[in-house]
Length: 166
Ligand code: GDP
Ligand code: MG
Image (cartoon, rainbow, N blue to C red; front, side):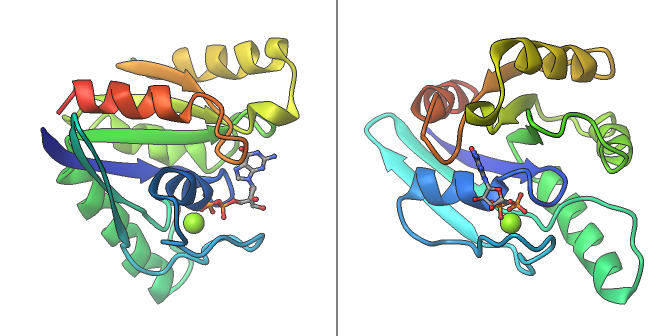
């Protein structure tokens, strides 16, 4: 098995951190500042069951200047060629303004979309449930996975599930 998984989500939800945890080396720039990831960086996860080629994206957002526009195009192109789209959100921040256009974008994607609720180490179970509920009311997700990219919670189980879809 082999395939592409693209990661979409607002800046700072933990996309690069997730990649680093999965691939086990620094494959993307992790920063407090939004939009640090300027390039599509592919990390390849390999195990006995197969391989997943992860594509980090700069995030889908409303372009404010030329570079923003370029990054938005890159993100859309990335998600289009994916076998699985991971929509990462933050359990701590929930749904924010930037999520609107990502959800709108997801409706145009044919690949199965996983809702990945990251940073569950920062909130209690009720808040995770509320967060999941708010996103489920907006889109039909193929899978829903609460994780902590930093702690590694549920990350390996999510990986196995992605492989199921390839
Ligand atoms: P990106 O913009 O989506 O790529 O987000 P980053 O991976 O750069 O992470 C943004 C910030 O969130 C960094 O300070 C990370 O250390 C932090 N972060 C990422 N994942 C987690 C997590 O699971 N738990 C906590 N507490 N912080 C996280
Ligand atoms: Mg990043």
